Length: 425
DNA sequence: TCTGGGGTCCTAGGACCC
DNA sequence: TCTGGGGTCCTAGGACCC
Image 1 (cartoon, rainbow, N blue to C red):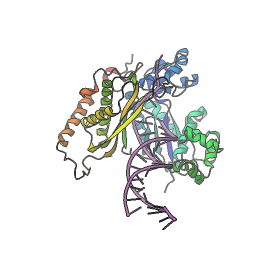
Image 2 (cartoon, rainbow, N blue to C red):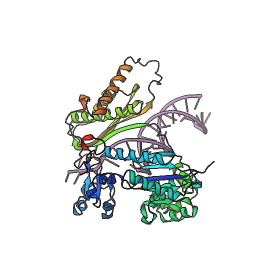
Image 3 (cartoon, rainbow, N blue to C red):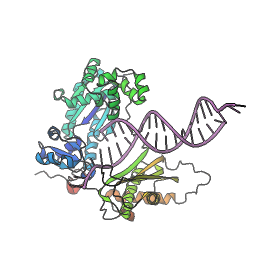
Image 4 (cartoon, rainbow, N blue to C red):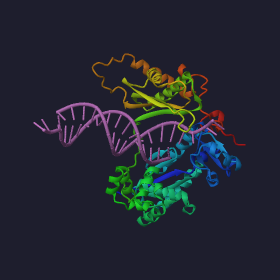
């Protein structure tokens, strides 16, 4: 049995790098990418980080800095990032036998056994060079016997230039040296709340956490943190998951470009979210039995009265028919809608999934007569919309969508739309 | 004036049962 | 006069991730 060995490959400043790739004129310009509605900064190029633009800050708070230094801001262009991500991932799949796509810009590779046949650092450089050459995106590589240590190795590769972007952390002494340098909140799985509680116990560095008694940690915190302690000591507890597990819930929600005060507009928004969520559900090949609708005012405003509500319904039997969910969603909305508030966000959630056709109806359930035709209708609709988005839609989704997303600095769909291909002159 | 979206897992506590 | 304990299931909430 070989001991586990992981590499974590993580794209540098991914969204900002994608934008820069198609704008060579911005090669040395600070660039940031904004969240939906152009609300927060969610990605920063190296230059923007250096200027002190913080991750996650609301744009209006960073505006001065942005203007003063001529930072170029882009609205998020997920179609572009998803396409670039796919190219990176398929390149990785050609380089390593088993790959877990962990997020849009990161993947874990299974390198078990490779330490006998390869120089691991050299292999890391090969990954880096290949992706830079084939796709134009810079990545960093961290290699270690557990996922948690591979994450830290990657962090080190990003932080220290002289590593050349690759850190091999298979050596125990090297692990401890790095752990001693890192504050505990850099550890994967240790967020803000846990950091505070750990610090109260005198645990400030990653090494101190690694040296804590796992049983004590379990009793003070949870099995999750205990697992982290073990992983920091080189005991692999989190396996590579090559196959994406089937989803357990699907959420579609969005903050509005402008506050909603009109119920009809809210109906449109909810209809839009239902239609998206159901489409995703059909793509997953699942039926859902549980639906939740929620809405809320802004949690940041102190002059608006706060209000937040959600309501759920259990369907008689699982479905993926948009029309069924639309009907229920409108009824749920009637129950939670209150006039007079300035709503900032709403959404829907589907859960309790079943494989189509395996649901065991109870004795009193109505038999399904129209399953087949409903299924065909939805299929046809998805097909029509896959060629040109929004070829057909439900009247309830509205036409103007005045509440829709604000995206004032959107880059072209360079790689996914024939009309918007980049032109080389 | 303006603060993202989409997920997962774990735990505590209540309801219920025997 | 005396009023259990243990198991399971569900849900809400909290924590984390990118």
